[in-house]
Image (cartoon, rainbow, N blue to C red):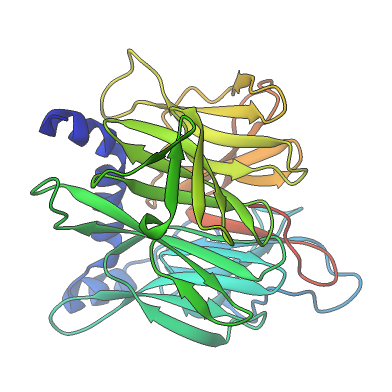
Length: 351
């Protein structure tokens, strides 16, 4: 495999790496300047943000990384799902990537230091209190929690792998919050490709989405191609399902996967379109979003997806119908990495 081919496979990863690095690895002076800038956009005030409901009448909430310039930038912030343009309540917890389900949150954050920043995966309880912290070997990019809240996954970008000097690779980890058992890399799993055991030094994994506490989907990159793989946590296997699938996201009903797909003929720096895959028929439906989406979409409900696109504050969240109809619309200005907290137990079905 040529250097050029490998670079094309990881082009989107490198682009996202650059965006995250610019926002996360900052000098102290830059952080001070940004805090002093006049905030604009939706109003944001400090308050209590939780991943569980406060009472039986609590409406569903969106919890996400706030991107509005000002003292609450990068903090986990909540707003009622029914009023996404309304005033925001910000916590004091800063995250670059975030996800939550059933009162368990995963916060991938920068750890600021005088010389340079490092990064950590922080497990949060329903009150956003830190339960465990794991230092990371690279820059955060993806995070997910299983529907039960028991399993947590994250992906980081790393460099220095032997198969490509100057290229970026990924490391994806899975943590069981019941025992705090950490599987540090999916590269320890056995890959079954086209019905046969497969090994290659260039394998990379990212974009985990959980079906339950023992099964998940993810992206595999190897040999110049990307694949949807189905993972088995207990058996520690990854089996290829379909080619040209990146950043899958399982629907709440478990029957469909949203994903981004490279479409031939599009610009090299904007190659992706959103699709939904029916897992029973393996039929694909292109969605009505015609812009290139470099994100792992989130299901707001069984029929609607949300995803990040560049905006004036760095990132806005948009929505589109999962059946291929309708038109995209903006959901949240100056926001990224959302989760939907539902019902009286704070559960979220979205993966």
